[in-house]
Image (tube, rainbow, N blue to C red):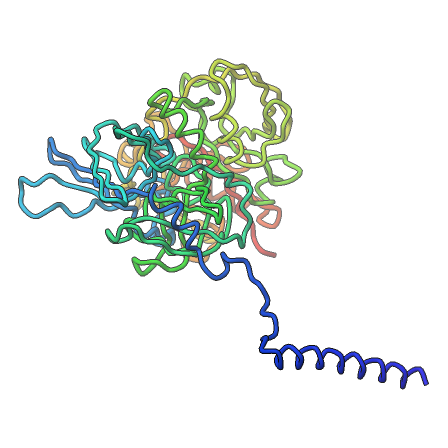
Length: 495
């Protein structure tokens, strides 16, 4: 009986609904259509708000001819040697026809202050002694007032207008979530006022093309010419500055990168106020510890902290007693997650402020006090030389057990590769593909200075130490680059 009662109730409910719909149709009324938020159907309102404040920028080198940089080209990390990715720069824009013509670069930007302050990318205006700014309404302005920060790839341009200009507000990039919808605005391929739509695909990305990075990844189409333009949320607030694309074809492939607005805000304010960006300076070269085996060998309970690979001379770190191989695990009693975390915190510290560092050295914690200094303007602009071959390589000793060949570091070879005269160790001359050495990260041109913290002075000694060691437990190798930077690798077999 209960079942039949339920069936009857459902039939009566269906009849009532049908009667209501039929009644509406008979009275000339269509069933109600679900109402969707307007932004799902059109972005017209936010676009109307944003476009007037977006500008196109033509950067000119009018004095001495010089290669000009236009929009950042496609970035293909896999096609670049690992050690050069950080310093990868865009190719120069083609000069105009005619030997005497000024060379130009082209990109985008947006007004952030009604008095005429424009935010854009450093690589859009790099090398220019004059820029032309064009607004959506056709007005053009010439300016020589350009302030840049190459370490974040950001710049500001000031123009003089007789009346207030339309401007955009910087939003909170940290409030954006993966999946949030965004619009990219700019002048791709010179097509000014172009708008593309997409979502936030990832946060906190790093391409190792700038010293300081915090990229939002988006699938909104970004192409050459979009550089410097805004990435906005649906409120019309700027949450990113379009800066780069990752592509194998040379065009948009769904992976665009925008500098986060929270990083840009601090840089922009300092450029407006001081003309330069002042940052705290520790004076070390660092590396993340992502490998559990390496963490264990360094005496860490878990892979966190920043591994010091080089301490620069006369730096705050050097004066405080930091050493190559130290792992910075906390700063002012706050845990250091990784190198990026340490880099960001140190850069924001007040100049002249003493800080407490905790490092792990040879498996033991050690407390140090460091006084932060101002970061040199040229810090981070060094280039890595390419190792050259030498006749000494024919005397290489093969360690077939791990698939590597090494040779003695003679004064001639040290000079050829760029090592210091007093350097000690053996130089890697060949690494077999898919070998244990290759899997550990050893590369041709590296110098191995220690095996399990014991100094290496000859090729024969290196071979003996590796063959006598336990590959099951792993061997800790200390390696060095020609610039003096120290790294740590673990040679370990899978079984």
